[in-house]
Each structure stands twice: as structure tokens, then as C-alpha cells.
Image 1 (cartoon, rainbow, N blue to C red):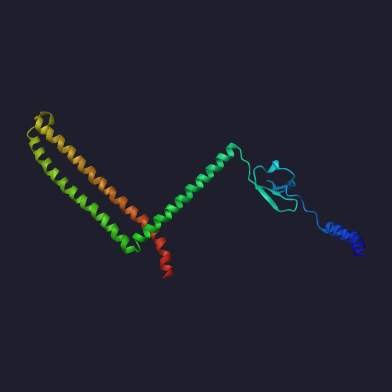
Image 2 (image 1 turned 180 degrees about the vertical axis):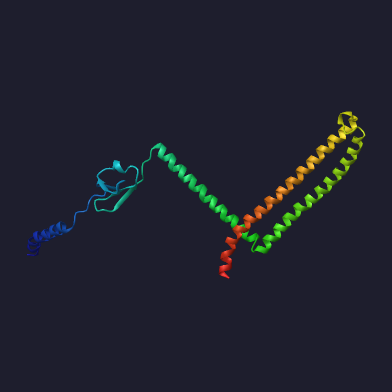
Length: 219
């Protein structure tokens, strides 16, 4: 009797199982072909069952049948385009490194010169050192000028005709001329160095005023 009840209920159980299977939505196989999608140069969205030729220069997305992104395809470049792309990346790296270096110099400048007084003190010290060198050079210039007066006095004996002067005196005239020329050029170079130092400090002060401004604002 029990066996008969079990056998009789078997078709009903099978029917319920079949209904349950039919009620579940079909799941696409994981290796189902994807759908490729991109936005072309004209702003149009294009879809295809294979990579899209009109979007080789831009990113494409491969979507699963359910619409999720399976993968992203990077743009394809010609050799020239790739070289240009790499050059742009290189220039961007150079610019970023330059900016980082500039920020580092600014921090060092602020640490060295926290205010205007320290900056002007360094300017005065740098210019003072150059002035000391110029003063020493001018002293030597005066000594050479005195020596030349003595040489010229001897040359008057020969009516200032260098060709009639003895070899030793002519050599003195030549050496004196060269020494005075060297000393004059040296003093000129030091005066030019003073201008460069002043210009450097002027440029630094202009930048420092911009860097000091936030400090003043916070105070």
C-alpha cells in the first residue's frame, strides 16, 4: 500500500520540478560573444559584435549580453601617432619635474630668507665682498698708473718715440700697457658682477614677496 502511494505521487513531483526549472531565467554562457560599443568622432554611439573599425583611435568597451563591461580595449595607434603620444607624455613628465624642482627651490628660498631683512642683509654682504675686490683692484690700478708715469718720463728723453727707446724701456712700456689693460678689464668684470648680483636679488625679492604674502595673510 505504501509503495503504491509513492508511485502515485511520482508524476506530481516530477511535474513540479519541471515547472520550477521552466520558471528560472535562462543564464547566458560565460563564453557568450560580447557586444562592442564606443562613441565615434562625431559623438555617435556605435555597437557591433566585433571591434569597431571607426573607433580604433579611441577606447572601446566589450559588454556582456547582460550589459556589464567585460573589458576595455585601448586605442590603436600608428607608429607616428604612438611616437607623438610618447613625446607628449615625455614633455608632460619634464614639465612636472620642472614644477617639482621649482617648488623645492621656493621652499629652500623661504627657509633661507624668512623676511625682507634677512634678504637685504645677504645682498649687502654679497655686494660688499665685490666692492672690496674692486677697491683692491683700483689700488693696484693706481700703482700701475704711477709706474707708467715714471716710464713715460723716461720715454720723454727719446721724444716719446718708442722706436728710439732702448729694448728694456720698450719692454717696460709694453708690460705696463698690458697690465693696465688687464686691471681695467678686471674692474669692469667686477662692476658687471655687481649688476648681476643686484639683478639676482631683485628677482628673488619679487618672488619672495609672493611667497611671503600667504605668511602675512595667516598672521
